[in-house]
Image 1 (tube, rainbow, N blue to C red):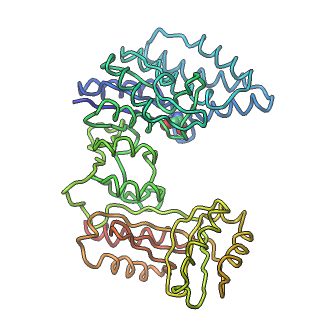
Image 2 (cartoon, helix red, strand yellow):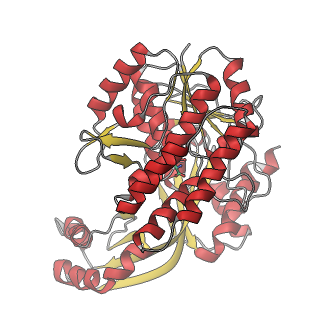
Image 3 (spheres, rainbow, N blue to C red):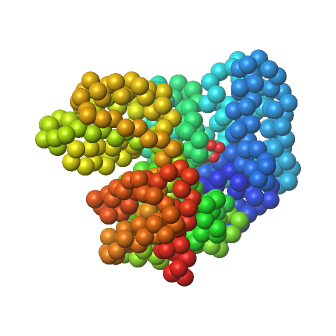
Length: 439
Ligand code: ASP
């Protein structure tokens, strides 16, 4: 049984957390390939080392002194090293980082050092070989991941090393120049490694016991999700449910490798298991609720729109030409509405409206902003009658006006557009009707 284990920033934020990680690894012989993040927050008001590194880089760029910030970062690592009783000096490493900062190069190198240094410490502590991700995770000149080359290099390296610590979040171009993934990208590194070694499981250790049915900032103490399919996860994370980096799903999903989200601070909890498919029915009709605020809608009305061939295409081209991505597109016989992110749209608003007028000569174009989208997701909805009825009566009871309804043809999700200021009420009402009242 090979398990790739990725530990997030809070799991490796202090010596005490490293000790928990050691126990977790020792408990299961399969946990042989370890991917660390940079040290995260130790307390809610603490700073993440990656944020501090980006700050250092910004200070260097603007010509301000970065020495103090760099020394704060070094202290974070030195505290971990001394707390673990290791004999390891990072002086030379910090000298190199300082020199690079003096040259004011790309921020990717500086940002990547959090994972790199935490990886060195973790490898020394676990007594595992350290493999630098710069030789294994390869990007092209446009900073796009070279999937095949990366897979090949990881396979080769991990054939030679059954145990290893490989830092997350970064890789390099073929010329050695460091490139990072987007924030939270250590999840992607773990997933790439799991794919390369055909792992039996990708364990992603964090500070929560898996995915929750709803955002705990909105719903008080929401229940967790035991089993989630990749498709459900995709819908939920697209709509803002955090925990895993969106792009980390694809490598393992293709190979049918399950992901298990686990809690370093509560290692006996089973967490959430993410699988390709399952015959296990979810505990409740719905699996999860997620949502995002700040959308705008553009409603286009034109008599006989339905018989005008190419109408939609011409409208969509206007959005494409203005580099605006479309979120949802409910339509009627003579109307179509397009939901877009407000920030993206605002900049080019007038250009888009003029473009639509030129492209399709509508009878009317109406704009609305301050809209939120709420996605109710669940594989159990398909086999349960009356789900949407229950959602809408719950919303009506909570006095929430529904602006848009979009049910995917897979019946895996129902997306509801509401006003921004009804967002939380809507989520709570849906949670209550499907979860609180069913316990
Ligand atoms: N340390 C990086 C970040 O804070 C990457 C990661 O933790 O996955 O975004």
